Length: 277
Length: 99
Picture (cartoon, rainbow over the protein chains, first blue to last red):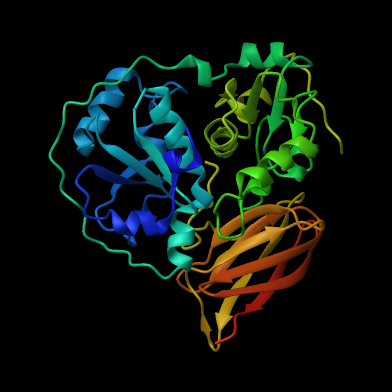
């Protein structure tokens, strides 16, 4: 798999706007972004209400995912191109999620909604009507998803990559700085984790840096690629972005995303936490 | 929630004792500039957060105390503005994007 198989640029998307085999999917936490305009033909996927179980803290199950994609008019053979706001955090999360349930051909649009807007490209308000499908998902691919016990066991043995900002890593902040800071959990990071913020991998316009640049960033930070890697952030979406870079762009094989991330780990009783401030 | 909240629908500004708010408007000429991307960079230039300005050009960050840079992106433009956040206060920043 190469970069071109998993990452397409805005020009590619514009050239495929009328390609029936390509389904554009905008993924945002803030669904009002889609209402203010979206790429022509794009369907909306709500990270919070459609990809999360609304009672338990977990994903929708295989059957629910099948229902969701069928209702959105996405077929098993479609090329799904994901994009969104927040530098593609939630689109990357959805990419990982589509991979988790075994979708064959899924790609990210480099730079997401921000790059598209900064380019001054067209956004429309028309909501496409797609015929429902009979989507069939695979069982979850657990080789790309880490749970808390594996994370605790990974301390000192596997690469733990904390992709949050340095102030969240050190414990100075509990959440990204665009959010109020009141939280119940402890601040800090998992012992032995290295801090490689997701943002180091991206340019100001949200596009990914080159493979060589990304490889050097990880090498300089001390990532040992001979070991398995688990990435985490606060709720698992920024770490999906880094998971994408490590596994899909650089081709590292044993890379998992810990979607429980700091909101779970920092609330666990009895686990070790490091705090630098 | 982890993504940047809609800056049109922020709660009223209340600054907690431990918080250091940086907020303000991005303007182009006399008008607020909606839809601009404001990036909060720490003292080393490292990205910390990003929001998109509201219909009136408003943005808000809950930062930590200290020196920050606001990098504002609009099509074809990038403007850096220095700001110092103070614990327990809301510091107002004014960003001017050239017409």
